[in-house]
Length: 142
Length: 111
Picture 1 (tube, one colour):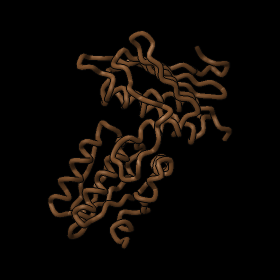
Picture 2 (tube, helix red, strand yellow):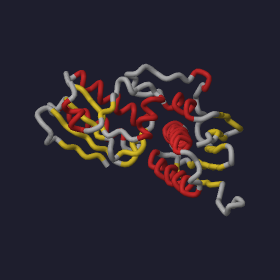
Picture 3 (tube, each protein chain N blue to C red):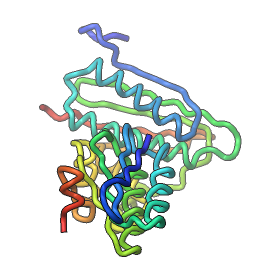
Picture 4 (spheres, rainbow over the protein chains, first blue to last red):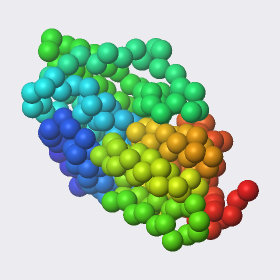
């Protein structure tokens, strides 16, 4: 529904859980940034990083061998930007309380720590057969 | 898309990814760096001036390339880093191991 300035504030896409879908995630966020030019560059950059990391995690770990879609909802509020991912793939085997940046020369293992550093809230829950990821970045004043 | 330029001097190569460095292209980047080092060019500069976005898989590929180049007695340097990539390097404390040079020639000439 448009806000009182005539802008959309809710955006969604459903795409296959595979790496190529990352480009569709970026395209969706590009639409959000175009509609909401008042979101600061830092907020855009860090929110997009976190959303990309979670989308990548889903593309890499959720499919169990059969085709799988995920759905992404992005919502812009005056004080925050939220993203929610839903998929019915495998449970994510993660421990958000233990996610730390690996050693400098490590070739992997940074995604979750980067996500936690980029947003103010990151929640994962498994509900029946559905994975829910929720990311919130509070908007900084420019 | 990733371009490879080997016309920059003996034992050196410049690799230019463009667009977003995410898991869509990082397997290609890893292979390209490995093959380039195997071909005898162990001084690699990754020119990121046409690259607007990097995620954890992109950083992983750069670190893998750095290790591959160093194991062959060379080095991997990065140049042309934009604001998103600079932010991600700081966030992960990798700005110390992947020191950003302003230009490709600066990266090639650095001691």
